[in-house]
Length: 155
Ligand SMILES: [Zn+2]
Image (cartoon, rainbow, N blue to C red; front, side, top):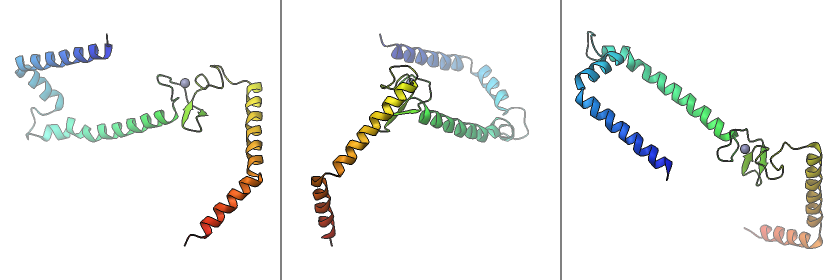
């Protein structure tokens, strides 16, 4: 059973019940809404609204903008593993994802130890040295020269 559908149907039933209760008791609900939005017992028809509840609309917009900014910051720095609340400080997949130490595949769910950091550093240095060696190979230089002459022939 999909609990999202159950929650959605329950929410729709609650909304339908609320609308039905509002329609059946319209004078009471309307008076309550008028009092709480400040649109009753005022000299003009909308004076109470704009000096009361209506003046809060801009504040709601500001709060919404701040909330959106905080949410976006949270999404930017949060661990990309779904459902994880930790800060994603460790890069993986060439910078495509940022995850916490528990979800990084190199750390096996534990904080990285000094020995692990040294081992990963040495592996990275070996890969960089191998790449440097490949770039120094004569075939790679021939490829670079061919690329350079091809680009110089461009008009
Ligand atoms: Zn995580």
